[in-house]
Length: 172
Ligand code: S3P
Image (tube, rainbow, N blue to C red):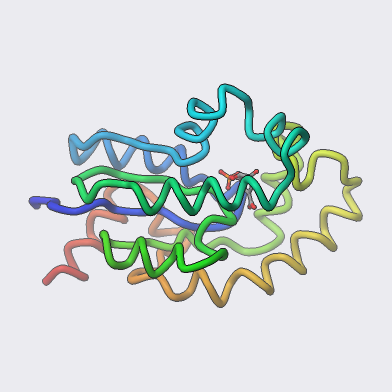
């Protein structure tokens, strides 16, 4: 399968966009790009430090700039959970490449987030109860955006082979 455009992985924090993105990039022999990592390099700060110093609005502006300047090249690109939900970012991604939404049940997302929550500024200071409320609310708000992806991958389809099959089906 020849990939000629970027493949964007979108979805909520903690669904595994980075882990799967790396595996997919390996399987397809494509470069892997993570928007959070690219922005951290640009900022010379972690995302958490950037939020603390400059705030969320400034971060969203930087995400928008990043997605706009991205060159249309074959690559696997994992994006921060909020990126597709602000401005015209999702349309921009859909114009440049193929967008795949990694869907997972809310309960599972919460379970996964309880582990590495400290490095995520939006949830770092939340108790388990607050996390449940926050994630449920934010998911309700974001799912309509995520569902505008070209392809939705269910939890079972979220392996490198599963995604490759979905891409093949979509292209043919
Ligand atoms: C965010 C998700 C994070 C990161 C930032 C904000 C969000 O990326 O961009 O902390 O708004 O959902 P991950 O989805 O990779 O955790």
